[in-house]
Amino acid sequence: MPSVEDQILTDITVATLNDDRGPYGLIDDASIVIQADRIAWVGPRSELPGDYAGLAETALDGRLVTPGLIDCHTHIVHGGNRASEFELRLNGASYEDVARAGGGIISTVAATRAASEAALIASALIRVDAMLTEGATTIEIKSGYGLDTQTELRMLRAARAIERARPVRVMTTFLGAHAAPPEFKNRADAYIDEVCIPALRAAHAEGLVDAVDGFCEGIAFSPAQIARVFDVASALRLPVKLHAEQLSNLGGAKLAASYGALSADHLEYLDEDGVLAMARAGTVAVILPGAFYTLRETQIPPIAAFRRHRVPMALATDCNPGSSPMTSLLLAMNMGCTLFRMTPEEALKGVTRHAARALGLTDRGVIAVGQRADLAIWDVAHPAELAYRIGFNPLHSRIFGGLS
Image (cartoon, rainbow, N blue to C red):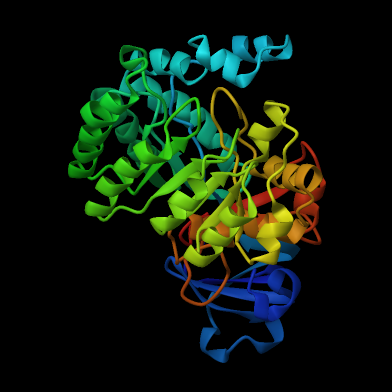
């Protein structure tokens, strides 16, 4: 498909994801006017204003157009892999067993510290390219496998470099509070004070941080320790998010909500009070079925409670080398439906509209006038097909900022 700028996409079905248009915000036999990197008009083809006469038209033979997909939780910049630990877990070891034995996050830390920035970029681009071929236009990338200032900064620089190497928007998240490294074993408080917080300040000073995350769990950090990191993030005017209630309920989501967090992620063990706190704060629930699947968990997130209290649900790959070695947002959509009984419409909103909100982005995630022209064009007749098929990629083409 040629470059798309100041033109009309026509003969399409559009899933705008705007609720005022009914399920999926569907418009049949529609047109979209793109001017520069923005959507200038969208609606039924029969209502296209005459002002746009003369613009080049691209007829798409009835294909479905959705917002470009957004992966709002990934760890794609890292060294090495953990295939051996995958095998250990299949032989009976738990995620906690592996972590406490020096595996898990810590094994990736060693590989990441040994990797150059160029090597981190090269390996991450392989994963990024897989995401782009499935319609992703925005990707969040976390640090958290350095756990020292030098490597945390190297990871964030690599993440920023990806945006220069590929047509994709990258949002960077500082995750220094991911785990205490071996040199701080049993000294988590010292790690927070001596490494994590100074590294956050250094990364912010270098313009490398869009948001701050942490892992609130028994094998990671307590709510009180996370709060100290979040206090610094607030002082730096950086939004926060949190890995919370994945393996137990420590009250992490309530803590995150008290800081007005963009999102709380995982949430398998979240209780009703935590859901209510998120609802009051406007915090998005980021659902991560890839980790649930890989770790063979049985406790599902409280999907019904999120619906009941109108907590927006995003979906993401959680692409990482240990608990979710997955790059497919389409598979995440299917898993959200089959494992957690989300609806296909919830799944699509989860990788578009609500994923944008989980990143604090207001200029994408729906198809509407003034939004970025980040679009995915699919060889399907109805949006439910995107969550229905397994191991099948129906992407026809991708438009990023008005350009294919």
